[in-house]
Image (cartoon, rainbow, N blue to C red; front, side, top):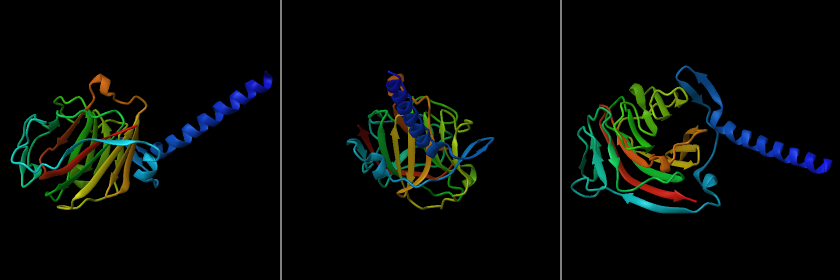
Length: 234
């Protein structure tokens, strides 16, 4: 019996160490007042998805004259032009995808770019679809704050647990291929097939609580989005 208890303790210790080691990927970096400047570690989307089933759920190439019934405009100047979603000024009034719900475990792919020299392009995922001043669900901001900071943030762009990239400068008019993978409370953000940021949420937002919407967001940038794909991960 004593040996059985010892074996159980050792097993639990190994599992705990493994989990702690896996979480280190998300939590290492420099803590600053505004969040965590994340220290990048190599990882590929293929390695994350190995052994899992990825099932396509929704695709939109935007090759039509208007946004259509799958999208809800909260305000601003959201429109389709030349097969691309565009906004020049929305003041954080989003374009919400209401025609397809995001599963908790999912992969999102899209293209996004900015016609502004200060860049500042962003979208939200796993939000509640409501109107908020600064983000909905998890916000993914590329070249924000005049191209000084890129972030993943939860429920508010300025949340103190957000993860940041302060080193990368994004380019005006460059098309960025974005891929977001979420499995439970772990989120990986890839840009042009390279890991860009990662976020660990100990209390992840759940679709059962209404956090199931994707939205494109903008303040006052020349923002463009195209080729959206959503897939379920099992």
